[in-house]
Image (cartoon, rainbow, N blue to C red):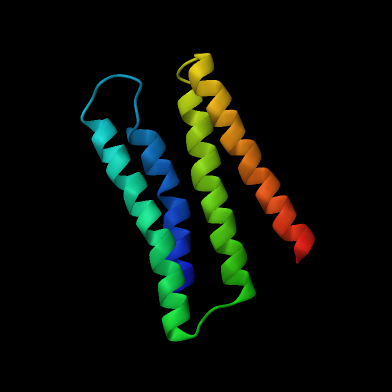
Length: 109
């Protein structure tokens, strides 16, 4: 069950990108709501896996990949709208942090 929720989180990336626009629109609120739902599923799938005793190394890896995809793809998409240095630098720092943390975790395991 927890892995299905994680896959749902990865599937929610595409509707977020479809509904997000660079213009002021009510679709942006839909994109935000879907992104928040994806964030909530990050907590929910771990909770369900622990409560049901269905934790697995595959599930942990899938969860990690889903987290990185959600953050990195969404950030790349949003900075493609604007070339403002005030958006690009923080986004690049967040993306680099995500990659470095993932590499460090792989190194330790």
